[in-house]
Image (cartoon, one colour):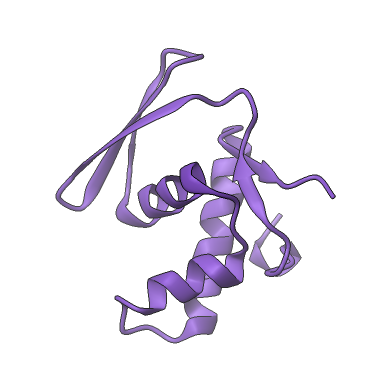
Length: 100
């Protein structure tokens, strides 16, 4: 799957069985998954996406819009980056699309 397969207006949320604890240090995030006992180091984009989704579901468009406020990057490029991160996080069972 690649970012071209993601509808940028469908919301994403944390996977229902994922219980993350996130700490932010500099450019990186450290994530501890309470359920699996695994620890992960995330880059700033993946950390931002997960931290945002911990508050509430969000679409690729919404996540990219929030990022564009702090980044000097074209919105379409941000959408592609966010989509790729969501795919990676979904493969780890951290996030999922909101059921409609």
